[in-house]
Length: 241
Image 1 (cartoon, one colour):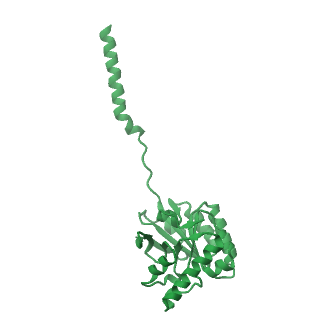
Image 2: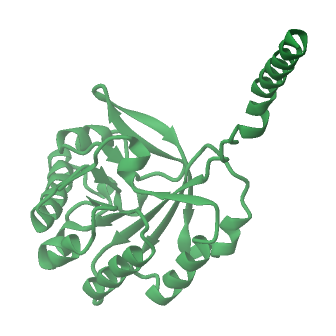
Image 3: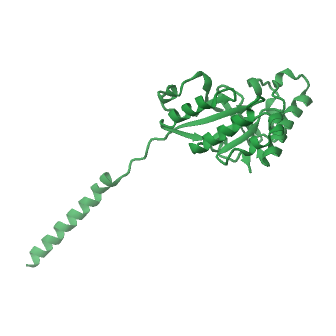
């Protein structure tokens, strides 16, 4: 009898040990493949419908619970301060100079600096916030851009077609990105792109019809994308509210 009991116990031990070895193979949860990072940029300059367009954009982004980054000309923010306050916490807000001038068209450095600072100040005052992102009008920059931005308290620059730049340890550091003009690509195009560790940045301005943007975002939501704002892309706060 004792032999039978011992044999039974030994058998149970073997079964339990075997299950302990193979069970992780069945219980292990596979990590989901990371989504493609996408940041939407919206540039708001002077136009007759700037206020209505930005209000509709804000509502559209909220309806999709979607992060994005918005750049507003200082004069527009000053004239319509509600444009800045329209946007919720998932949207980073920045400036693109005060007068929407190409910085390279201004020969005097001090005047260029004033143009950048005034633009940021106008946006900050309109929204009662501290903006840390910038986009140069017409993508026009030169070797002075990083000096202009650092002296203006700006921490992230989205003025380029193949990169973005973050202020880290006292200098601007370049990060790779693939930048598309939203008006030049259908939403279906992005659904067919292979996934990449490099973020995709899609740029629109307020000449793009809201009705078209609504269709664009509805299609994009079907893709395997993670929509981020500048803060999430950078990993540190770029709009202080």
